[in-house]
Length: 301
Image (tube, rainbow, N blue to C red; front, side):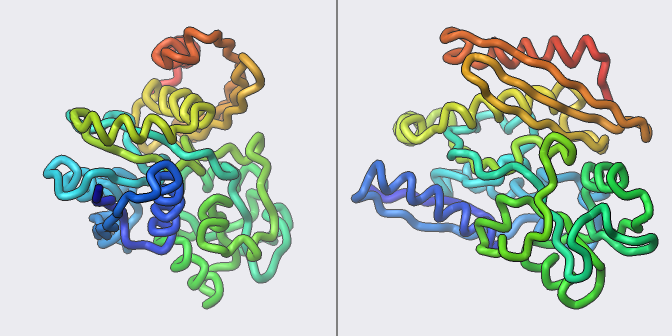
């Protein structure tokens, strides 16, 4: 059997697709795979902040079109790039075990974010990272910085900025974790929704591919993704408000800490959810429960 997998053309996207292929070929050793690299609008329009041109969904638009047109059978994404609502006819077929969800501080000059002096520049276009970085050190200047992982590292090495913050997962996947000066605690520097999760998107009607992906789906990571994306949906989906959420599964409990920064006001939310075997099988139960929690907190964009 031969299948076509669509992905972005960056080094990180290819590394993530390779991890997915390893899971797939472990299950089906005789499977033939073609990798289809697709350049997305987000890759092309790299000189403007994402919030000004349509958000993270620009990294998946052309890939989803290829999936809907059946030019590819499976699309592999960073799940944090996925909008809450998928196009009709598509669904998340599986997620892989989550990599470290934390962010990392990288600099050629400083060992910690908190040690950066007044006027030192931190490069990021992420509203979440801007808010959290200023919570730790309000003396620094934030400079807009886009590009893939290796591009941002190059800009740091070229002296365009003094420091950058990148996801630990991405650095590990492109073998750049040796650059990390400080891993920022996810309970303080709260991660993006679904950070560190690789997902596979598939056509809902492709029963054979769906059945294969179900066998490699990582249940714990999937539950975390459902919870975190429910939070995102409650507060307005792909809005421009800085936000983050960190979840931990502890037996039949799910602990989480989340934040929003609406109109410049930073708020944190902590809670614990319990679930039984029924709700673990039917994730809509967990999703509804977390929606109720955040709806009662009245956190809307």
